[in-house]
Length: 323
Figure (cartoon, rainbow, N blue to C red):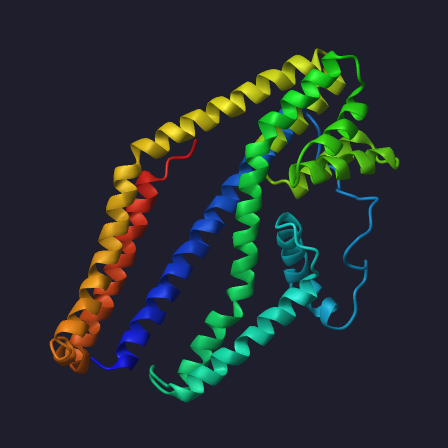
């Protein structure tokens, strides 16, 4: 089998996986938005516009390329993703990195036109290389959010112990920001700095939930706002919330252990056809040549790739249990 056919298969396989991942992220974002609306309804408050007293990374009215990006709402989305990933970048810098990453794709596609023709290959590789910096940012964001989620129970326990010792809530926030390790310690320091500079505590907390888009952070914000309105023992509330989060972690561990067989099956079923094809290319290079050269064989290869992707997607959906 020619090398071009193998590269085409890998590229198409990667593009289909990317499309499935983007669709899954879209439905997850919509579910999180619905959960946010439910939590706001539970607090009995209307949505407050988020403001910040700290230095903004973007000007209020950008011009030039930034203005064009802002008109397409990419600037806001990219800036939020970068902030949640813990990167001190601007959306323009990210776009520049994506633009520079397309150059190797264009050059490689022009030199190796393994798809329909040279321009098509160049465009496909340019798109794949161009979105790579954005995918790296998304990966860093996911890892940082996982670390934030792990630190949340410890932070809530620290706040509860501090308030039981007689400290005020704001003083407890300052102590927590100084003692807790990053990245969550950095977010609590920002929370304390905002309210210390004069922002109302509800606005500072809502900014905190914007920077830390976790369900546990929204529970924490709702608990503090409800205690502010109705009164009660906040230290006891935070202690119970930390216990609930730890129990949810324990349940997630049990679910992960129970679904390990399904995840292993999905991995094997996904890699087995690819490994078999590569093995045949090494052992008998001409075995698959006739199918790759035949027009119907190409459709069969494409159908096999699509069926493989769909099978993996549905297995993932079955074993991915939300806790």
